[in-house]
Length: 298
Length: 252
Image (tube, rainbow over all chains, first blue to last red):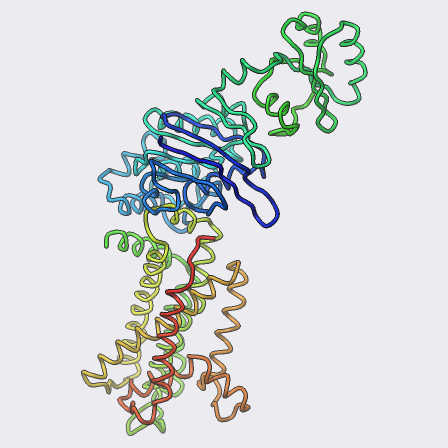
């Protein structure tokens, strides 16, 4: 097994951050760890790469314990923060990694696929957030680690930059194991092979994207604000639709089945209601009662 | 060795591009040499025959420089790197973080040495400073220079371990450095200070370092007369080595 996490537990003071986490990964691909802020994703990843100590359990990478310095040659890590030196250039950062790992590459040529060549002699402090992120990813890929772990690599970036970075990650994952945390679940799921949904330190659901969607007991969701809820409820009752209601703040979510779709499809033309096929964020919400991102305008 | 060179190269570039660091480590010692050299560089001192003011300025400047680099430069740099997450990134590389800090200290030592050559050359060329040390004293001077680096850089490193932010470090270390200057006997004669201040001065390494380097520089160091300073510096350095070996180094 490439990665094996068994009965992992971690607390900060009285707060349980990770509670009996079990993960086994033995194939190349992108593994997504998704959950809202504070769900324990970062702590889990930092324990995996040996940056933090666990309270209980076992974390092994190719049979080597994660607190063994040897794993630093096998696993690369991208932190949430932009961790570039401020007063050095892109060239100097890349050459630094090259020298530390004894690599024999042309760092300028290497930047081509990351579309960063034009920044080669610029100081890193002058780069935009997305460019800094791409550079850090380029630096992370340089040593050719067998496993890489990225903590919210697209957080705070615009949609275009997020897609660019996800494409780079996807490409690296063709021959490597890539573990990524993110809270933009629907977008991240498009690029992931396997998903672990984590909430309050526990894995609440895991599986392949299609498998999770397929096995979920409902097919559609209708969303509305509280002020429109009565109207929706009357209609649902009138048509005797089997439903499952989940409320988050002022948003009401009715999970319904495929056979009832025809009865509610008239809602598609209403501004007050949103009807769409169930996606991963809806499933996450269904299981945890927590939303992964701000509720879209209903 | 290649890894050490890689870190020294990047630290050196970052340090030389930091205007505040360069001011305190290179420009200020030159200004002090020009100001004190021009004011009383030619005056005779009570330290020995033909020993002029400029001959006392150089050793004091050396200790100030090393103390400044160690007490302020090292902790502020480390805490800034910590805040930027750079230490966290380095912690994921297959190196020991202790090894990185050694490279950082070596970089500061290198710039200190360069600065010493610059203001030293100015003192000799412009203000006719004299060179008194013989071969063995030169060897002892090199050892003392390195040993004082060890003491001050270690104190700076300990500051970095116990202070949370670069901003706090800047305030705390500036206060500590000023306290050392005023109890060093250079800004104000120690005898004129209250007894408890004189006692504090003896706890700090600054006054001992200045006395030791001053007398060594003018070839007047005597084991009997300067026994207390020699013992203090030796013990302080050894204590620092022991403390550094025992502290736990973490990226956060």
